[in-house]
Length: 125
Image 1: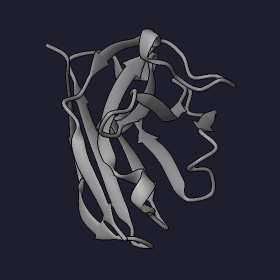
Image 2 (image 1 turned 180 degrees about the horizontal axis):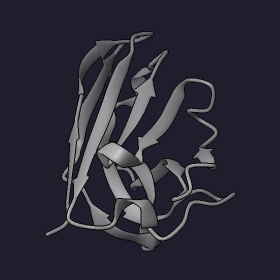
Image 3 (image 1 turned 30 degrees about the vertical axis):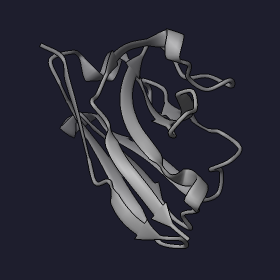
Image 4 (image 1 turned 45 degrees about the vertical axis):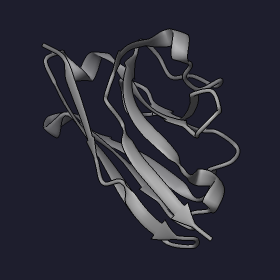
């Protein structure tokens, strides 16, 4: 059974930091790209970052570039999202996802094979 379990969300003030983790099991982790999506209330789910299976390409959407850093540890079957300089507009449920690829255009909902259940990040002003 495929499992993706996110952790690390919470409430933080603007300018603060959080580190999200995603622990994976039930599939060959090294064969897939992994991405982070987020969904704010009333908005569509968007792919904000992804890393390819070879761990030599990482994508960031424009709104988080320079503030967030994504990494993966294949040996631990885990990915992380270090989020710094958080803004109220970063408030959302953050989801870990498995996809076939991560490329110049990032990662998209239609490319996802498996989803985690999400972790809530709330940033107060």
